[in-house]
Image 1 (tube, rainbow, N blue to C red):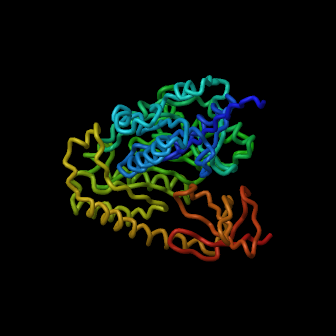
Image 2 (cartoon, rainbow, N blue to C red):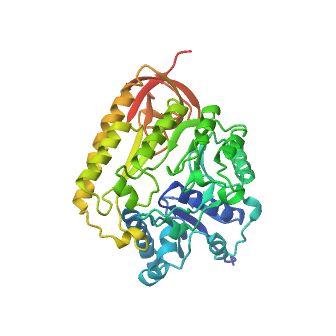
Image 3 (cartoon, helix red, strand yellow):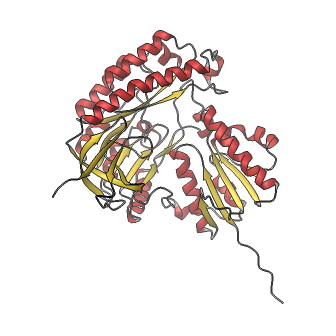
Length: 438
């Protein structure tokens, strides 16, 4: 007679939202695997018996996607298709009580900082010695490095501090150790992320310490590109530009969400800056770091945004000619100070304004891309897709920015390699090239 064997658990972690959420999922997976639990990420196979959904709760569209994903797996759970369903992340942090009532099929909801509690569901221990080590779900040649958690800013439209808490920096030593581990795994590009990069170090070192961190990370052997995401424009520490200009490993790229350009809107947003201060900051960046690519995002349809204020934003975008730009439509979020204002811009107007702003940016991007034809750039090859090898220059971040396409029928490139590519053609958001001779 055969002895009955217990089927081993397999966990599928589903990540929604931003790169900061992705890092949280990677840390969770690392801890599960260290406890000998089989774990996969965003798998399309139906062979996992436990699902963990890591949710986003930033704006309405993100919340809708998170809720729909939970409901999808809740229906599978109800039919017995999976054994357990757990939900974590920002949406769960913010709406846990409501979600428990509305979706009882979920076995447990967890907040953003409750990794040990999730592990307890698997009778697994949180292994402190793994700090700085993690499984990566990105292509093997790049990874995100979260340098801080939370945010101390008080932007009136943003619920992130409600979900992530106040700013907490990680030590320089721990970040260098993690970057060293990533390099050992073959990572060549690290993208520094936080809710607010420029605040880094104030809590630990009583000063803005991002330049010190950057200098330390540049010493890590194997890391060739370091990219900066999510810097706040108010009281921006200008010595960041000096270290960018001095250190060749730091990409000439800065993601600095400005959100708006009309002073009235900026004041209602509690952004602690003005249009002129933002203009001077961008001009200073371009002066101190020649050739820098500025990525920014703007928020349209904020309560009270007049036609004149929106046109002022459009004029600002035309004037500054940002290299990269994204647009969000305002989402009325409970418990933010903007929620006390009337959400008086109708959805159609928000959509129209977003489309108008992106049309302006499309023309700017097209012109800048065509100016690169004939030039040669160092390109990191990310993947092969269809008939093209696809890579990025130092002026582009994965998934959100422009790409470099090389004809795979004519040329062979290795994914994860840096190549010198001469640009031969361009369109609105991508450029085309071929390996430079030599």
